[in-house]
Length: 249
Image 1 (cartoon, rainbow, N blue to C red):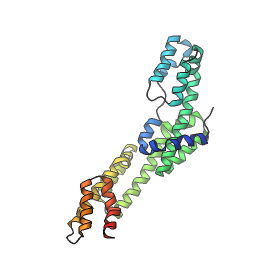
Image 2: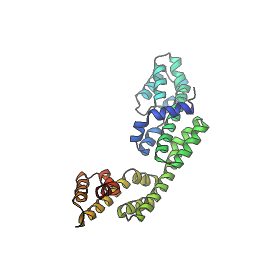
Image 3: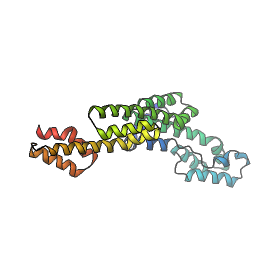
Image 4: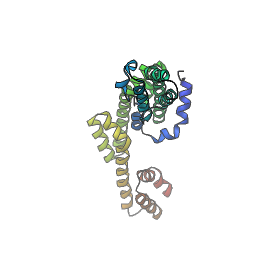
């Protein structure tokens, strides 16, 4: 049975805690895995011995990249007759793969919605609206990567602009590097880790500048020193954005 958009949305919502902890790149690597284990040996199922059929299915079951629907269908086939097992390799596997692909696309759409990645949202919705095995597979294999690349470029330009306005030298430096390299991998790495680390570098410099002012209050000095002692990008960002104003407010 073809999964409906409503059912897929429920799956994505149920997975929210795990999805929000995953970066888009992680989601991409897991979502675009195709159940290809032993494809070379299952192209002519009629020519395979019964033992070869069972071995091929067990390989699919043992593959950690196998999706839930394919895994369940493979287990059900192994519990059935040899005719059930041959049917799984020839047909049932691909029906289940379509279900896994639809769910994977819904997961990506959910993450993109949380991140405001418009190109990914657009292409994921197209694939889900088409609702064919070919459309969702094309999205997972190529469309998602290209759409994420588009969103990452837009986001990096936006970050660069904000960095220039605020004289964030490290952010400007790293954003410029990523844009100059211009690959999907470079832009993804910048958004996933480079931006956070560069912003922490700029925030640390800004915090030291505040401490260098001899006229700051004892409370502000204590808050700045606490942020530096914590040392995390989040603590420094909070101090620069909020903490320093709360202390003197």
